[in-house]
Length: 336
Image 1 (cartoon, helix red, strand yellow):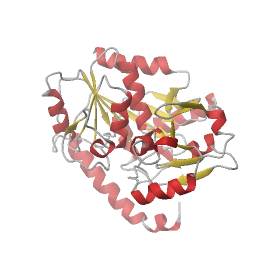
Image 2: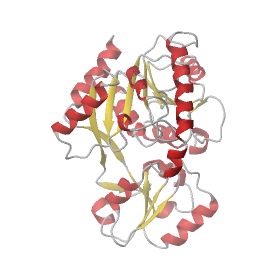
Image 3: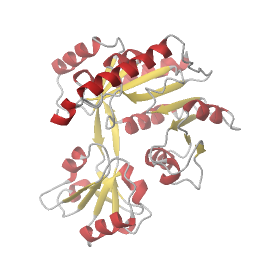
Image 4: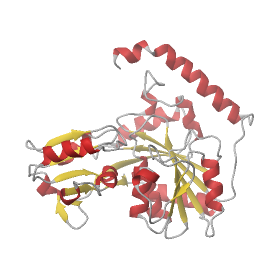
């Protein structure tokens, strides 16, 4: 914890008091929460950014889309449109936001919508001629205006909520006690070497705040990077002088997976809108080298001047041992 964050500790106490009052008012029904007849699954976290919500949503899409008609509903962070937008052939990362646009590009059989007002977004989806059977709410754990049927709370292994503190001293959006609203808790981005003893200790810490079952997952990188027309083995990238570009919350694992001593690593803020100046700077650094970016950044760069040498690295969530148990928990909720 840096000095500035320590100095801001009184503001963290005030922030915690305000969020606790808000949650109390929702818990007691003084502030209204709206329920809907169809199943709604929330994926979210207690901390800001970087817990792996996007690959977790994609995991649920793969799990459910052959059984149900699925829609995703996101806020559409940093999009340039307003209100409710349902993705169609004219959609871009600017109208939807990078993550929803990524869902739309990868899963053409589902409905993808954005709306900062999740209640309105759900109502708009249900008013469509072919309404969804299940809605996945992306990053909506603190969106208490909608009462979902199933809450999945994510916490990153290297940024564990039980060891964190409230903003601005720490990274928590609300008190650790907010975890009690979860129906399932997933510890994400775990190392492959995570032992049973370490899992036990993590579960014991979580038990202080929540009774939900706890699962462990890791991020799995693809063996290939992809462009619009080609694919290249990751082993080639790891042995070649390439330019790596990331505009995500925690890019270190992406860089560490691909880089070598000759790699050039360019870092931008999370959800960064690449300007023409950015494009030219990247182009100057790249020259005739291959340019590799994250899947989320690719949707913002794929139509730029860089497109002919641009590749992206797909990632997926992989559960450690207990994927069948997690799947059954979600499917059992939907059957009920």
